[in-house]
Amino acid sequence: MLSLSSMKAKDRKTLEIIFTNPINGNLEFRHIEALFLALGATKTERKGSAVSFSLNEIRVDFHRPHPDKAALRYRVKDARTFLLLAGVKP
Image 1 (cartoon, rainbow, N blue to C red):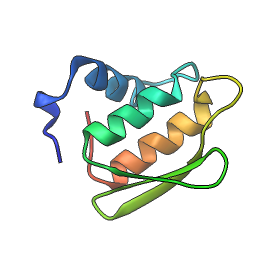
Image 2: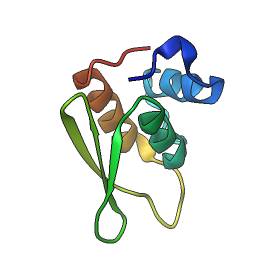
Image 3: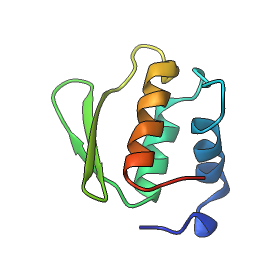
Image 4: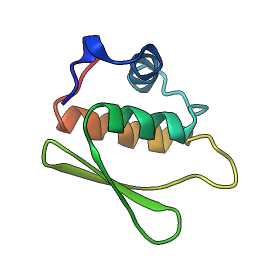
């Protein structure tokens, strides 16, 4: 797993946004994906828009947003929960 101090600034910013209250529903899902991968998560493509990520033995499933790119609040909340369960905090 990548240390938070050695992350790219863009990934650190995404992490901060995920943990900001109230939850930001305008975050592009591709930024969440990039953060997960930067933290060392493995990505598994599934059928259609489905994708799974595993980090520290924790798994989460998402459906990529379409046609819009915004993750919406419930996806950002799910990303926050996944990160907390995987032991990642800003």
